[in-house]
Amino acid sequence: MSKEKLTVNEKFLGEISKHMKNHNEINIKEIYSLFPKINKKTISWRLYSLVQQGKLYKTGHGIYSVNRKRNNLAAGYDYLQRKSQKVYDILIEYGYDFYITGLDSLVGEILHMPENYPILVIVEEAGMEEIQELLSERNLIVLTEKDRSILEKPIIRNKVDVILLRGKDFSLSTDNISQKEKGFIDLYYAVTRMEYGVSIPELSHIYQSLQRNNSIAIAKMKKAAKDRRIASEINWLMELNKASEKTLEFMSYQIKEAKWSQ
Image 1 (cartoon, rainbow, N blue to C red):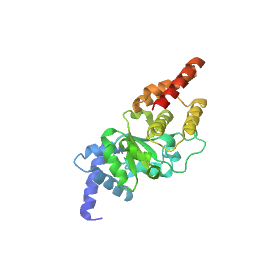
Image 2: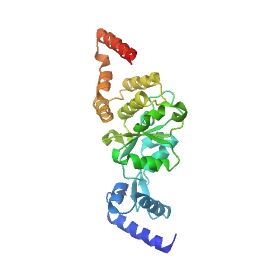
Image 3: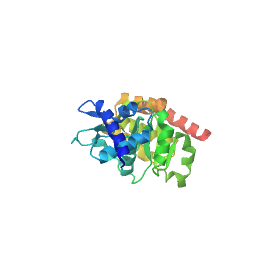
Image 4: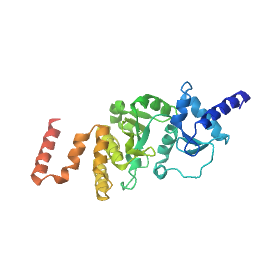
């Protein structure tokens, strides 16, 4: 590294250090805000360079300190498939809100976890295009909700690495991994709207497992459905157990009618 580049990095580190708090830590969003005129990729490179030199330490995902910290990463991260961890590590270095969702957040509720499946990622709308471009530059095949027609072709669907979905409510995640209620809602949406490679019987089994294990908080489930804009059908699904036999019979008849009229 050149002397000039090292000087730039030293100034960069000095400015970051001035703003560290909470046990001498600072998160990536705060760092971006300190350098609004510098490209985020340049900032990421400088952070990476300082970490490699041992002048800065990553004490968590997207959190940096001048002191080494021994704490382990969030437990949920360890359960992500390897490719999901790769996507997580890339996105945590950027300033947009996101979280991994779907199958990755439902470990323990699935009998047969597929060996390879598209990663579902919730992203704030302002960052959709940039994140799609960012992941594509890392040799990942990335689609968004707008590309759902492409997913109808099995030969393409089987090669997709990441599907980006828009989200607004980021309180439905912990350490950038969705809570189980949101994980199920996003998986349900992907299966019913985007030809996602999980069968309806398997989706039903996951839902029943969540119910048996008392893993569903009704308020969170409804909140998750609202964020995904499918509140009416999820409310209907959750009320099924309260419906009378005649009501279920009528619903079943109407479903058949709707299916034949399509």
